[in-house]
Image (cartoon, rainbow, N blue to C red; front, side, top):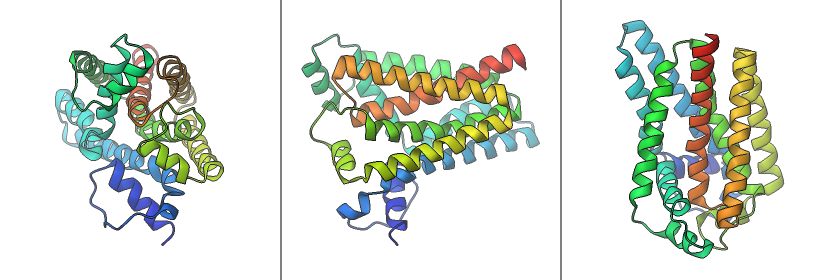
Length: 255
């Protein structure tokens, strides 16, 4: 039961998958982030099954791409997209740090959020449409898991921009050493799986994920003084996009 509760909390927060509801206690939150990547595993599994379905029944590329891009949104309920939108508004406001942090808390979205989400969607759809090799699709599926491993690690080890909020509560409740160790182990296993599928394509995917994490840390530190719950969601989308683009590039130039 001590393991089941953190799993249920992770799925109730980061997905729309129905799970039993119960009152959360502080002790139930200690290891919740260990299971955050499992939502990525569900997303990746559904993405893989959809592509298999498309191959068997010769589904047109436009449907394969559009539904494939929608799968993460349908499973997560757009949870991370909300963070992406708020982060884009803050980053592109060109305001002082304190004002950017206020913008992150604003429930309204601005023009820059809409514009950047449109750009993101076009890049994601374009890259996804290029993926035909099942090995590369498999690596992209694993990328959903890896992105959440890295996001969780960032939450635990990167400086926080705020002293209150849900993210602060999670980090205070978490057993940081244990959880970060578990996330690192899961991430390493995920990268090993990518390399097993295709060494060079796996190297590119892992490198893209690492580069996106470094960029995420540097930009958040410079502009906000640290990360927030919104920027953690922004990173998940950023990392997924970088992996899809690198695999699409590999398909084009080496496929």
